[in-house]
Length: 194
Image 1 (tube, helix red, strand yellow):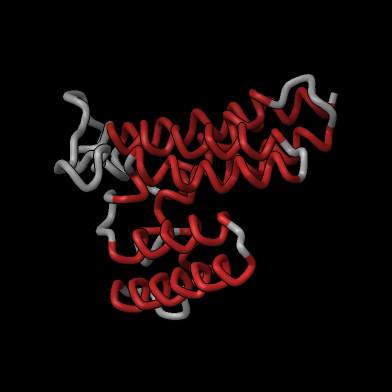
Image 2 (tube, rainbow, N blue to C red):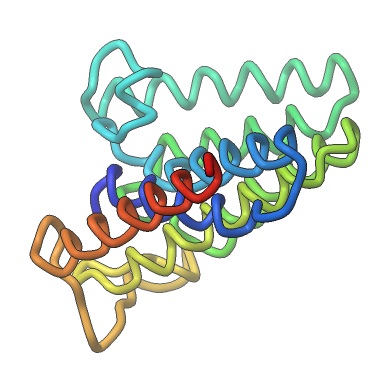
């Protein structure tokens, strides 16, 4: 699936989950679900987030960037005795060397990134970040599971797996998901304004 569809589904789900919550919590949950829906594609140099992060949008630069940042974070985590920096450093190094739909599309990738978000959500008492991030991330994995390329759910042990029923990336099925999610979000926002 494309980044716009992942984000549309993440936002629509964030809006649905935030119903009835105070505005601050709604905004936090919505933002976290949108970001969570994009994080798994950090393994692709031309993903939505990497368009903002990487200077050069190619595989070699992605690998070098994430390896250097990862080593720096591990060093910083050791100096500060902070496990979060170490976990993030390891996760980014694995993201750098992973092919698309590998580590970041696996249970291991989800666990590492989710753990980082959980630690910070506890430290700052922002449970909505953890909920929104996890929902966005999980929905990304589910959606990519339904593509013909599938995901490497049990990285590094297996090849990609996919659903017997698939939706072609940028195909009619994905376009329907994007349009449906977008209309739901617009409808929800109109109801919120009333």
